[in-house]
Amino acid sequence: MALKSETYTIRSSDDVVRVRQIARAWASEIKLSLVDQTKLVTATSELARNTLEHGGGGAMTAEMVENGIRRGIKLTFTDQGPGIANLELALQDGYTTGNGMGLGLSGSKRLVNEFDIKSEPGLGTTVTIVRWK
Amino acid sequence: MSVFQQIVRTHETAILNGWMKEISIATRRSDLMNDAEMRQQSSEFLHLFTEATQVSSEVRSDAFAAAREFLKGVAKSRMEQGFTASEISMFVLSLKQPVFNVLRDEFKGDASKLVTEIWTSGDLLDKLAMMTVDAAIELREQTIARQQEEMMELSTPVVKLWDGVLALPLIGTLDSGRTQVVMESLLSAIVETNSQVAIIDITGVPTVDTLVAQHLIKTITAARLMGAECYLSGIRPAIAQTIVHLGIDLVDVQTKAKLSDAFKIALTRLGKAVVSIKNHPAARAEEQ
Ligand SMILES: Nc1ncnc2c1ncn2[C@@H]1O[C@H](COP(=O)(O)OP(=O)(O)O)[C@@H](O)[C@H]1O
Ligand SMILES: [Mg+2]
Figure (cartoon, rainbow over the protein chains, first blue to last red):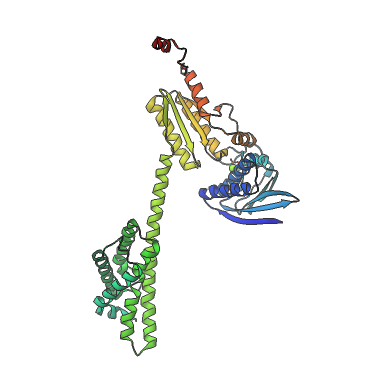
């Protein structure tokens, strides 16, 4: 059960900065350490930018979740863009179809506790991450 | 066919007087504008409005071009004077009451006609008021965009630490646009000052993601191509860990935790050192 939940649109690079600030605010609300806050915010930046640049825009849903006495921040990035045909490839370090470093997906996965990606070519992509306290 | 147009024209002076009274109640900001100025502006607009209504009842039509232009000017000058958006819209909206008053006197016995005329003229004035607010908002947005640009340049100062040593203390969010400005100003400063070492300090950058890292690496590579060595300083522990987890390879980049450490290696590279003058021959000579 989510303690609170909120959805934000991602349509411009200003929105990427905005959802990053949201991630930081929520992370500090559950008192994540500075290092963990930085990790979550950086993963947010990567995934939000993918939503914008590869997915053609979309949204981020932020949730404050609970598992027993543990609290966490769960972030879900969705778009209705072209999707990813080969997920295994996309998750490889250095793989990019653009001009990026190709470390956004693989890197974010290493920065969080839970990482889930679903993608359907032609329908869009959904990435969910959780960082626990 | 509506007839308020003729009535408005016939009673222009009465309407203007009524309008001035309305304005003085609803929006007058004597701190921002004097009476004569206000009356001049109002009378000019009322005239343009009356003329336009004789020809068309569509505010986007050519007939209203002069009235629209005029309102744009009003929005601009009032914005600059410090009026709020709602105060600016009241300029047009407060014209409704005096117009309705003359219509009421004209159609005393014909309620249905009166409603039609009030609706038509009111609708027209509402649309013009909205247009004025849109113009004001657009102006404000232009101002914001201009200020953002100015800030972008302001927040990327290249400073000279020593002969041959430049520093670029970055503060705030590094989006693509700003990073471009940063990169260019650093590279041109390297040429202008003929510097051998440049230090990029990221103490004030809250998030270093792959996009920022890529921009930094590109800048450092370009500086190197120009014959200058580039160091990266101000990498806080949390940022360092994140960079490692992301898998960003900075082995080719000289990094230091603090700007002062980077400055030290820069001096070493130039064959210079900061020494205490306590036991220095020059200082001793002075003591004697
Ligand atoms: N939301 C998305 N929609 C479509 N394709 C995506 C999306 N996110 C990632 N990808 C694909 O996965 C690749 C790897 O992504 P990433 O690791 O973030 O590297 P980069 O963004 O630098 O290319 C991208 O180049 C792109 O082809
Ligand atoms: Mg990416």
